[in-house]
Every structure is written in structure tokens, then in C-alpha cells.
Length: 124
Image (cartoon, rainbow, N blue to C red):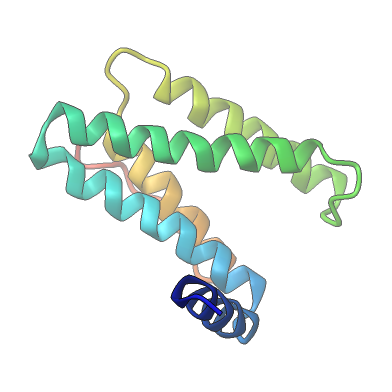
């Protein structure tokens, strides 16, 4: 077995020990952090972080459209609407990075059962 296969199996074992909501929250936090850290690095880093965040939100949107998704229809519709808004923001010439960071953070908090920050962003 290759080193990659060992690492892959170890990762899968570790992931299976954590609840799905916690794993999902971590993904949103990672994307928020990448967006935040890209800001001082410049345009190329921001473009890369937005591309990664776009992949996340396109996945969210696609999953909300899946009839096999176990979430209630009203939750799926709300998430689809949010995903469309986030994707539209990322398609702007100068997206509001602070807003994207806040949304990802709020989703992560919600997945963990915490209250979202709810305050306005400090710019971006």
C-alpha cells in the first residue's frame, strides 16, 4: 500500500469519528480563513480564494437541488437562495470579501448550533 493510501485511510478514519455538521462547519471556516488571509496578499491570492469559495457554494447550491437531500424543503430553498446570492457576489468585479467571510462564518456557527455574529462586516 502506498503512502498516499495510508494517509487517505487514516484521514477517512478520523473524519468518520466527527459528526457531519462539524465537518461541514470546518469547511466553511477554512474558506472564511482563506478569504481573510488572501486580502493582504493581493489580487492573485484573492482570486484563488474566491475560486475555492465558489466551488464550495456551487456544491451547496447543487446539493440543495437534489431531491434526495434529507433537509426539509424550506431549508433547502433558503440555502439555495443564499447560495445564489453568494455566487452572484463572487461574480462581481469587486466582490465584498468581508461579506463573504461573514456569511461563511455564520454558516459555520449555525452548523455548530451557535448564534451567528449578525453584525455588519468591517469592509473588504
